[in-house]
Every structure is written in structure tokens, then in C-alpha cells.
Amino acid sequence: MLLFRLAFLLLILLPSISFSQKSSNYISYSMDNQTYKKGLLTKAHAEFFYDNERGILVSAYSIPNEFVKVSNRKGELKLYVPKSNTVTYTQDNTLSTENELIYYFANNRQQDLGLEKEGFTMVDSRLDGQYLIFVWEAPETMKTVKKVEVVYENENPIYAAYFDNNETIIKKIYYYDYFSTTYFQMPTKLTEISYTPERDSIVQRTIFSNIKLSNSPNSPYFNFKIPDNAKVNPSKL
Image (cartoon, rainbow, N blue to C red; front, side, top):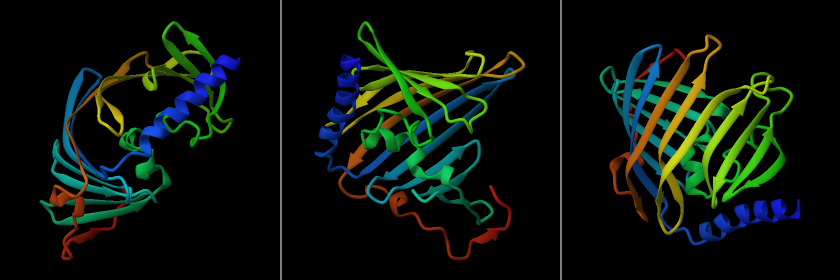
């Protein structure tokens, strides 16, 4: 048990040491996503612009439709559609940029991938060769998930499995092909497999590319403003 505690402590402390040296605040990258569901393939492409200090993420989508999404750490979200010059506002804590993948890795907080924030409790840890495995128990209020197991290689997560109350895996996430900078590491490829009650599966493959770090805004999107004459859409997202 002492070995597990030391491993967990190192997993938390080592990333925080590198984070203290962080100076590149502006992060931009491309995202390509493919989703396979019931035999159908859908695609999405977007350019992301993350201001780490202010906690603002601007997502400029071009596929399947053109729109710009602006979100912040308070969960305030604006969705602007250039074609119709309309904007939709909404606010929900689950929409906070601190729940985004880029937040966890850019701030070296990948030690729990937000599970603790969601109310999960770490109940076990074990070593399997070179891999460190943490088991997180879901809060009682969560009915569909009983626990999550996260596998780490060095300090980076490479696999997560979500279990239901029958100890059946209902979702798997693979993190791989890590991109390294002086300040942080992040996966450039994710594969997520969700199993449905109909014994089918939904498969999502996401690729992040063109990752750039800068000490100053290198794109107008970092300071994107919705036009003053945009029409407000009364419907919620």
C-alpha cells in the first residue's frame, strides 16, 4: 500500500513541477472527429483556440456546419452561426472549459481526468508491470456508472474503462500518440467506444493536430467577438 501511495504522490507532484515552468498561455490546434453509430459515419472538423490564463476556449467548426462556440470556466457558452448571423446563449456548469480535455493536460491535471471533481473517490490502486492503475468509485447519485479504472504509463493516462453496476464495461477510452512540449503533454489521438443497451456500440475517433503554443495571441480567434448586430436566438442549446 505504501508503494501505491508513493506512486500516486509522484503522479501528482511531478506534473505540477513542470507546470510551474509554464509560460506559453495560448494554445491552438485542429480537431478531426469521426463517429460511427448504427452503421452511419459522421465527421466533424474544428479549429480550437485556448486561452489558458483566462480559461476561454474558442471552437471554430467548419464541418458538418459552420459555427463558432465560445465558452469559459464559468460554464457560459455562446454559439454564433455566421450564415444566419445568430447567437445562442446558455449557462451550465458542465459546459465549463475546466471540463475540457485541453484543460486537464495543459494544466498537468491528468492525474484524475476530472473524476474527483465529478464526485468520484479513489478506492484502489495497483501495479501491473509498467502500468499504474487507479480505481475510482462513482458517487451514489450516479446511477449508470459504478466505477472507473484509469491506466497510466509514466504520468500519462492511456486507457479508461467505465463499469456499470453489473461490473460490465459500458465505455472505453484510449489515449495515445502523445504530443510533448516543455510545459505539458497531451494525446493527439483518442478512441472512445460506448456500448448501448441494444448490444451495439458507438465509436468515436478523434485526432488533434497542428498543436501550437504561443506567449501572445497568434490568431484573431483568441479575441473573437460576436458581431453587435447578431440576432439572439431565444432557444437554448
